[in-house]
Image (cartoon, rainbow, N blue to C red; front, side, top):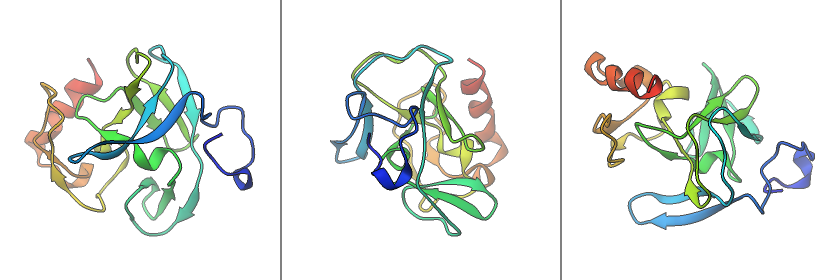
Length: 154
């Protein structure tokens, strides 16, 4: 398991044989790589961590004033405007939204879960749906929201 024993041993927790947080490059920093393939629609893992009331680096928004602080797994998902995973913050699950080959990084769209980010930044994902800027869903101009809808529905 990637999570320490204090979080329990849910069978859906990410396992070290399937995932690792690794340094990707200078631009992205660390990311989660999967060592096995996942099919579109498959639940690939359950997330865990500490629930905090503030936005931090490595948090994911659970509700308006609650955030999951996870420095073991989900806090290191990389951003793409055309993601390969989707997060269900109510059930704390990660689902593949397209087939993911082994040895691939996990990419989410940060605007899917976050109203506002800890820190906004220029996007370099290279997707044809790239918005050019990464922020929370409430930070986006209407013209930036259209590519999100197209990428999710592709």
